Length: 228
Image (spheres, rainbow, N blue to C red):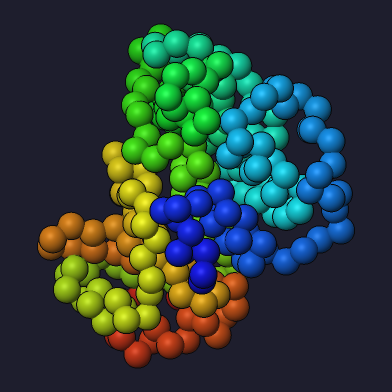
């Protein structure tokens, strides 16, 4: 879990360390292989690094809603943009201003657009810049794609206290704050998403191995799903 130490100082290295550790190597092209056909020239460093990493660990392109292999140009209420990820059949997407300019050029801001094909499409600014957002997006995708899962019913937030000595927080803002706003936590072989307020909470786990979930049974949570 050493990659968590890098999130604040070098999120691109944190992303690389997480992905290389979580997903096994496959027979694939080397990371320095040529640029993927359709990639725009001069992508920001974080997005170029992501595509190089995907050539080492193609699993991150097999998520249910992966980062696009071929970013595409679009326009929106905030100006021209480069869409690098879509979700739910294109009902929402994430983009960066294109071309990137100003002080944020090396690590641009991320725009989240809902219903991008509609005239009244709503675009909001993500809290994380591109380098940290790509880590956030990848952790969420890896959690969804994990082979084993466990999820609780809604419970009093105080019930989570028994977990804090087992889980390490990832220092990122909540993901999709206008929906459930999950915060990420990690333990060896385990990813957790926690959605909570001062009164109620839910927690969901994704694990690489079934046995990793077994120790969670000692807490007597009410499980909506448990694969352990």
